[in-house]
Amino acid sequence: MDFDWSDDNRRYRARVRHFLEQELPAEWPEIARHGPGSKEQTEFSLDFCPKLAEAGFLVPHWPEALGGANGTAWEHLILGEEMWAVGEPRGGQYMNVNWIGPTLMRYGSEAQKDRYLPPMAAGKAIWCQGFSEPNAGSDLASLRTRAERDGDHYVINGTKIWTSYASLAETCFLLVRTGPLSAGKSAIAILLVPMDTPGIEVRAIPSLVGHGDIHEVFFTDVRVPVSTRLGEEGQAWEIINYSLTNERVGIPRYAMSSRVLGHIVADLKRQDRFNDGVVRMRAGEAAAACEAARLLVYRLVDMRARGQTPGPDASLARVATVAADNAVLDFALDFLPEFTTGNVYPEYLAHHERAIVAGIASGATEIQLNLIAQRHLELPRGPR
Image (cartoon, rainbow, N blue to C red; front, side, top):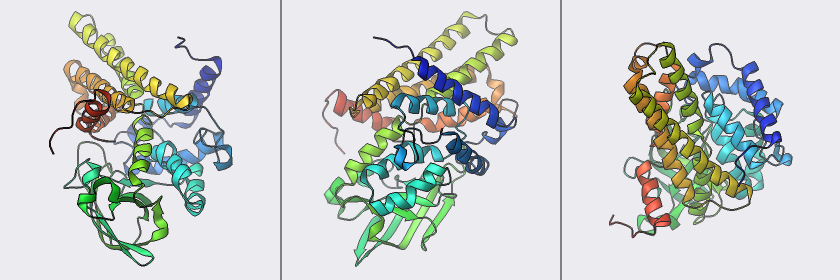
């Protein structure tokens, strides 16, 4: 088996890195300090992403007819690694290009594609995802936000929580219940809701995981046309699984962890603090965790490149990626703890915040472990 990159892949990565070197300003570490959901990084993305689009680096994996270049799955991965390694200058728009756009391509109506895909391909659209709820957490099958049919409209009532980017988003990819709770997954639908619709209230939740990353979103008698529904009623679970599989491999967090680990080791060497055997062993363990996550993600990309649909392998890669984030974070806290005070190390602080949220976003790690137990190990489901 050949694990090496092709010459074309190497040239592609070099082009992406050259673009980033040219376009990221000297103050980028400070702009990226508080994460993709922050006002600073979102505003930067609305200037940066159109430049990416112009250079052909925003949606190269999309079909040419929709603004892409029919790029390969491996080029998509390389692009994601390089973006995430430097702190994700696409801000929340990474969601558009990785999973919201591809989901609309597969399941959206022609009107939805015409309305939403061009702004995404131009780098001018901010979305949020209305998934988690106060009484359901990340267990999407138990969500309670209701959408009652009233003629040609739905009337939405309920609350979402932990909603990233909500205060700056123009559109919400919203999961709602259209039937009784006892109907489970079959009574869930997806609505594409403009965030300026009357009856929507957004409240930011102060937290350690970055500015603008999490919110509560309240829906009170929000009326939207039936035409905002993505797919059919009863089809939502199929669509969600497709979306989440793309999302879980769309953030190569190990790339940032690996880069930060390298910088921490360099700092420790400069300070003559890397000669201790325990320090070196822990650095090696963190590096191994990053490599394990990288190879498990590469397995998924290989499946995608071969036209196969990843199953529980996506959850395995997701758990390994969280473990890599935490291994690098623990190494930094144990051997360079001074990074947590002041703002001398903005890159490490940004990674710290991203590592905290890694085990929550895209389905909590505990849910991923349950999925692995049921779908990979074929263990029986526990009582609920």
